[in-house]
Image (cartoon, rainbow, N blue to C red; front, side, top):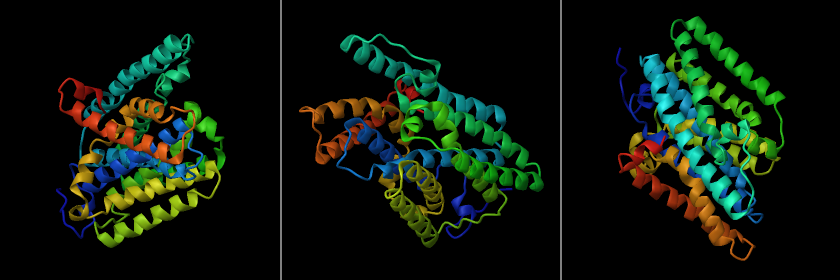
Length: 338
């Protein structure tokens, strides 16, 4: 049965096709990821709020899972979902892992510094030099798991309730049991996957609750503003706690940001931000190349000031968006992007 679409209805925030609010959110999330990675690359000790950028990955993860649930309830077949997911995630992962392996281990490591490439299987899962690429196979796995869960939930209301309950309990247990150092979260993919899993579990519960009408999300400015206030509060709190705690608060902020974007009235979403957001996943994949270049530009004297670090961030961000814009307009190159 078709769902009505209106500015003041629950369904108005949950329709087929692209969602302007979520696209805008992807632009913000991409900028957050670039900020964190640029900060790590140039070691900006003068910028105390790099934790703000931690919200990018949780938002991407939550949005991917919620959309997977929607596809299942909209009747998209399993074969089509699997085919699309593999094509959009594994292919770019393999291609860009090879690119970053050549850049980091062959050109920079071997040819420039004389260090022969030595890559373990965990390095391969992490992207073989493009460490941020771990996210693509992670999203593939949690997305397909969400597909199976949604297929089961779609068959009965009771099954939906059980899955939601198990998801929330599992997320709480993982948050309580899984603690780690900032270094292990950043560099060890076997630690990073379970660390980020609670966001996917909560997003699964949110998506199923929306589909069963147990969670009503009207697309209204006041509702969206309330979720944005929660987002700002969580991010602000994340700047004054320990690194592990700030990452957990960023995960909660990512879910709040998802809800804010889902309830954001389309007429109030800037069109330019929507266009940038449609390139968000591409920016996530390609930005490391521009990060390397911009870091070398600002690190000429070996000392990086906060102003130079911010310049590196904006150079990386602008260069990445321009690169994705160009690649999208070349038929063959377009296949390099998620």
